[in-house]
Length: 258
Ligand SMILES: O=C(O)c1ccccc1NCC(=O)[C@H](O)[C@H](O)COP(=O)(O)O
Image 1 (cartoon, rainbow, N blue to C red):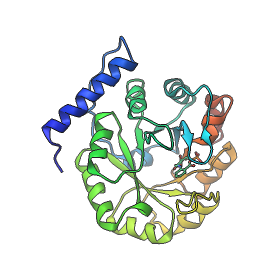
Image 2: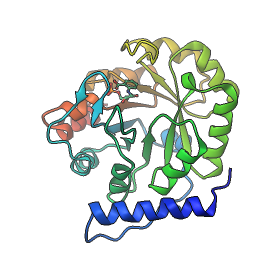
Image 3: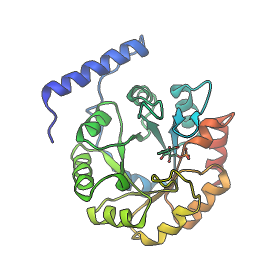
């Protein structure tokens, strides 16, 4: 789907308005000219990638941090050695924002993930306009046709996708679409229950050449190290970092432990 020029203009206007309001004194422009990003190649090049998440709240736990500041959090992640940053942009349940994505984009060239519930190609356009390098596509929430369309459109825009699965059926769906990076979510989106060992169970079902990221409920350096040893190419960590007294220190301990 090609973006209509009026829509593009609306997004640009919105972008400038937000930036002017929130980041006085700094110069920004939409990030349509970001280089093409290949998540699979990036994960293969890196030894192990910790994707540190900027997550203001969760539907179950509410606000995760009283002094939440996405820019400060991102700065501490960058300093601590994060290899990528995930920014939750969903507004109503996670209190996220596309503004956070744009604000982090200007801080770093690290790969940025727009983490949201993506159902429509326009959300992928937004992701690109606000500076993301890759988006989350949740196979458990999309039909085969929708996943194929959104995945294809993501690639067409020069972005990458982290395709998340929880169930074996949805893993098969993602593999038949031909996605190149899989995230296994330890959280069951039907029940919201967390099983920290779930990712280990699905890993053997994924072809060797497909990098796999373990997601949710990971909170210690030992857990990250064990996942690396088992063959995961990275982990996605939110709550444990955001709730930590010193997110940068905890992340650095994880990085050092690998
Ligand atoms: O985090 C939640 O409570 C949640 C509830 C419903 C749907 C999705 C949810 N989380 C989204 C995520 O995928 C996590 O933010 C991400 O995997 C990091 O997990 P964690 O380290 O456990 O915060």
